[in-house]
Amino acid sequence: MVASAIAAAVPVVAAIAVFGFYLQNKIIISIRKGEVASYEKKIGELSDAVKLQESLQQKIGLYNTSLSEVKSAVSRHTQWSGILATVVENMPKSVVLTALEVKQRTVKRSVPKKDEPGKTTEISVPASVLRMTVSSLPHSASDKAVKKFRDSLRSSEVLGPQLDNIVVSQKTDKLGGLEVVSYEIDCLLKPKL
Image (cartoon, rainbow, N blue to C red):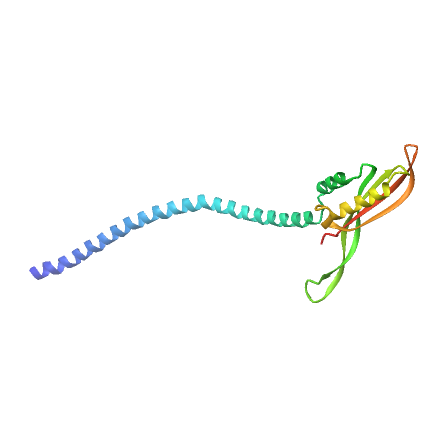
């Protein structure tokens, strides 16, 4: 009887142990499902942030591209305020400025080829010309004043390094009914590569 009771008790104890493991695992699975649901909720909240971050990264890439284009465009243009201030500061009192304009010209320059650094190719590069016309009365000492003006522009800290050449031409002209001597001063600026 004891042997049959022990034999009958073993499956019952085993069934109780298996049922206990089953309940324990069911509780653990239920807890894990709650944790998974919580993580999925957090992932859902963070996925919007990840999408926002990705779109911001794309915008940053576009902005960086635009900034590099702006940088290259700005480097090809001349800041005129310092140049104009230099012109005004050095203008002789014996002449009158009658015209001021900026023109563009193209200059051919040899630059290294991108694919073959040892070889060069010619490209057309834009360059600016600052054209000034100054006038004075015929019998004044304007020739010396204009030469001094030209030399001061060449040696100025602002305009001097940007100059390729200064060409001065002279002619007689009428200004307000008076006969005057006009000087056309072309400041040929170095091309921006």
